[in-house]
Image (tube, rainbow, N blue to C red; front, side):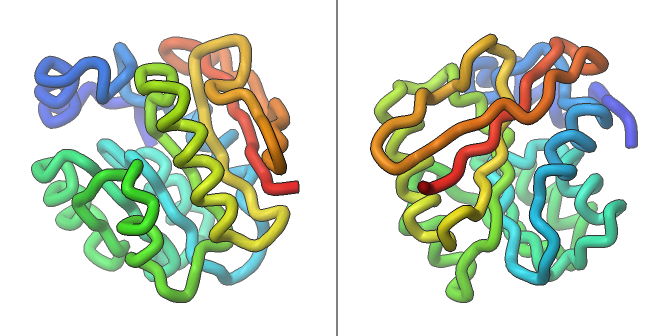
Length: 184
């Protein structure tokens, strides 16, 4: 697994830097820290904003069956590339902020979620609604694992949502923090 500046990632970044949200693709150290927060078990895992698939590849490398992964990618060309790269993963082109649409891709429900979305680039109300909506649809205690480049969680917890700092990854460009949201 490498931190690659693929032509697809670069074109996507140049076309919509706020949607991509990083000056470089996520690296293997960040992917490992994110995947380490996944619970053991057999449930379906939601991946939001998979981009080039670094977290997808890390899940598969960890031994997670591709059929357990549902990846929602906004960019149609990136979604097509992910389907070619990971043919057994359920890849859907769509808007991660459309919670009902995201939930429809796994009628069996999600046991956990991993997010590569640059939440700091979106209105806080949108991020709060996304996190609350997904956590409400998952079992109590199921994690939504998010990374960001800020010092604080990208979305402050409120109501029945808790967040904990899980890791600080220096070996990523830029260095990143891993946050785990759960419903209390």
